[in-house]
Amino acid sequence: QKEVEQNSGPLSVPEGAIASLNCTYSDRVSQSFFWYRQYSGKSPELIMSIYSNGDKEDGRFTAQLNKASQYVSLLIRDSQPSDSATYLCAVKKDSSYKLIFGSGTRLLVRP
Amino acid sequence: GAGVSQSPRYKVTKRGQDVALRCDPISGHVSLYWYRQALGQGPEFLTYFNYEAQQDKSGLPNDRFSAERPEGSISTLTIQRTEQRDSAMYRCATGGLDTEAFFGQGTRLTVV
Image (cartoon, rainbow over all chains, first blue to last red; front, side, top):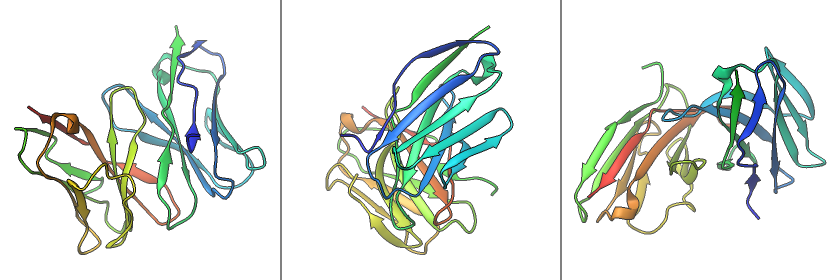
């Protein structure tokens, strides 16, 4: 079992729709969770971080964490073609532990 | 500098040669990670430093790979006796202990 799992996609949504990206992790004691966006040929860039159960909103982005279900998601409201990218989920157990990435979900937003 | 700086950006080397990849972190960042990323895949963990201590090197593929961060700042990833299968994008990321990590632009290594 991979430590961080994501559906590879592509997830295709029309412009203006809500895109929902999901991630599960295997280690129940994980404490810190991150979403990165990576455009083709570019480096991953941080979008959101979340550390406690519940929702965290930042503009059009909402991160959701459910530690009991070992599940973290990213919602993108009013999706734009410029949101088309690969979204990477990353998990860190604690300060002395490595940051582990999933393989990413490719999102396509159709004009 | 303002961001994580990696050098060189591109490196072409002949099979069997040694290469050294450099990562210059954001000032004050104590955590430093090295990843390798193949096309269409997520970053694959190689090694992790807290300050100068190599906390985890479980992702290094074999003993040809090594990394150091002697003063808790700049880090070097060294690959000895390179092989074609070592060709990849090598990425460095740095951050606080329990906070976000930020990536450099990466080094594209090609072994011919």
